[in-house]
Structures are given as C-alpha cells and as structure tokens.
Image (cartoon, rainbow, N blue to C red; front, side, top):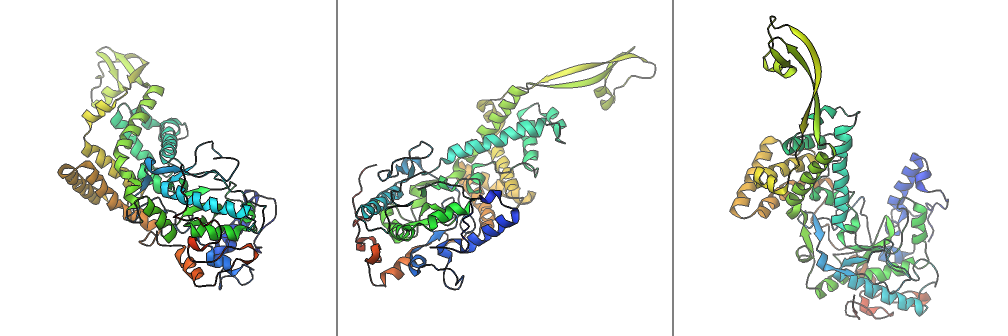
Length: 494
C-alpha cells in the first residue's frame, strides 16, 4: 500500500528543515492516510477501494480536537473513575508501557476485548494476509490517561512559574511588585496581572485546561494505543499504514465500533456514533444521549474548590520560600526627631530649623503570614470566589466580555446560587463562556455523529467474499466468518 509521499529516509521529521517539515505535514494531512485517498483527491495513489470503504478515521488535531473532551452542550467533562475497566491484555506479551493497568470506559473495554479475541482467532486460523508484522499479536500499550494527575502537574508548573521566575527574576519588569505582596489579597491581585501577561500561560482553571491542546486526548478514556512512536515522525506512521494486515485490521475494528486516529495510526478511538458501539453502550445501560451523564462528570463543578486550593497552596509555598519583605529606607536623625522617606510622602517633614545631623540606612522587615482554608472561608465569600473565577475565565478566553457583561454574569450566577445552589451558578457561568471556546474549535451538534456507519452500510450492500484471506464484508459483526464475536459474544471478566 505504497504512497508517493512515503519517505523512507531514516531522518526524523524534527531533524529536517522547517520548510521540509511543513511540506511533509501538509502532505500527510491531505493525502498521507488512506481515509483521505479517495476519488477526486489524488488519482496517482494506488489504494484498494476496500480501504476507502472501510477506513474511517478521526482527526483529533485539525477536525475534532474536542472529541470526548466536551459533551454535546459544550461542557468540559472528565470520566467517572468507577466507570473505567481494564482493557484486555490477553493477546500480547507486554502491558502498558507506563507500567500502569490500561483502562477505558467499561463498554469500550468490552468491545476491545471482543475485537482482539476475534482478531487473534483469525491470526491463529491463518486467515490474515500474513503472520508477521505489527498487527499479528496486538496488545494495549497505553489506555486512558489520568486527567486529574495531568492537571495537577500542569497547574503546579504554572504556579511555580508565577511565584518563581515571574515575581523574582531579575529580568522581569515586575520584580518590584513582589515587594507589595504581604497578604493573600495582594498575592491574588498580582496573580491576575500575571496571567494577563502574554508571556504567562493562561490555562489556569480545570475547565480551560480540559479543552486545551495540552490536555492529552487519552484523558477522555475513549481510546487506546497498540504501539508507540514519535507522533511527528511520518516514517513510523507509514510503517503502520503499509503493514499487509492494515486493511483487514481496520475492517474488523470498524465492526466493533472503533476508528483510527488519523495522525496516530496505532491509536484506536471509540466511534460513539456507530451502531456497533451503541450495542455495547446498551449493555452498560447507556447510550449516546445518556453517556455524558452516566460516565462523565462536568469539570466546572469542581473549579471553585480547585481554584481555592491551588491559590492558597501557591501563596503558602511563596511565604515559606520568601517569609519576609526587606525594605530599605533612608532615615534622617535630626534635632526634632527621626524622619523617613514615608514621612516626606505623607507630608510630615522637618522644618529648616530642624537641621539634619546625619542619616543612615535602616532595613525594615515585613513578615508575610501563611493562610489556611478556614481563614479564607472567613475572609472571602462564595460570591467573591465566583467573581474571581469569572475574571480568570474571561482572561483565559481573551476577554470576550467587558466589565458590564462580567458584572451581569456574576449577578445572575449569584442569584442562581442563592436560589438553588452554587453548582447552578457555576453551570450558568460555564454555559455563558462555552460558546466562545466552542466557536474556536468549530464545534457543532454533529460532533459525535456517526463516522463509520456509512461505510458499514455500503459494505452490506456488496456481495460477501472470503477469498485471499479477507474478512467477509457483511454489514454487521455477526456476519463475519471469523470467530463469530460481537456485542453478543463472550464477555469474560476484567
């Protein structure tokens, strides 16, 4: 399955010139994947029609970067841990590359198990094109990533930059502001200034991080990897795309409701809009409409609690590292007493008769005091935190609201909070801001529409064949001649 854009050089993309890398990325994006090589795009590529028919893929970089990161209403989401199950490892000789148990949502783990079992039976029966290659003995290299752990690493880095380089670096023009931080309130004001600085990464809230490109797609628990490699190296990608068993593996994957990541051909993603995956969801008492409530939590629900904890932790760490402010003031000792620069600023200054005898430099130490959650609860109301949260979200999204709009959002959110509960107020804030981050990613109501069903329907209309070691091309898993597995097949334990 050759491609004229397949570069067999051993040089990694990162070692090539910027122009060459740009051209290679453009070619791969447009033509590198068999899913893109259909009639009217590039007639010079010799790609079997069957691959075009059965080869759905999802582009998580350019087309659907929010896939699994938001629900159909645009709320940032994260998987409920109790809904995760272990992916089946029976087909391979090694486990998760990170040493962790690879996980996915329960119905996806079930589908993956049936999928791999049928494939392994096909390999043993000699019904694949070859008994060698990358797909002969597939196993799960990586499953779901931990969103909570990843966010914690992210926010720790951001806060460390603020309390370190931003406030203390000699090169920063804002170093003098650190001298004004003597209380938690001062700390928060400087923090707001810092995230408004273009040099400072502005993904502070969990909601903002959940939908940004730094949030690993595997956080969604909708996918698993059966290999590893440098995502920027097209040579590695073509090793997978040109494997003799690629076409057959993709056909069977589609029958179990999986599609491949266009930019990572060793990654398989649950096609939530497909009929096969709908059957597995039904076995776990959910569907494409209920899934977002049965298997996911809204990230915004914990945003305020997280914000309080992270800011207080960062402040206390700052206090521990820099326990006091050392200010040096010029002091005149005169006939009428002792005077300082602050006296001059306030208008209290010795008259000419009180001639200064001498002056000396006297350091002043102002000690910072750490805070606690109890003190913060007494000092700041939920309304205060909600307004701070709105300010931060507005900065994160590039100021879509002016001050009047922000005050209005805060007032409505507070009314909802007092009339119902704080979650309703947070939901209103999140919904109000959602349209701005969704617009950026071209999100619409068809984001989770079926990707594979059309190909499967096309296949069911064509006569079945099992010649040359190919799978039969019936429109459902039950019609395959290999294994007979499917949503109704053996489930086994996890």
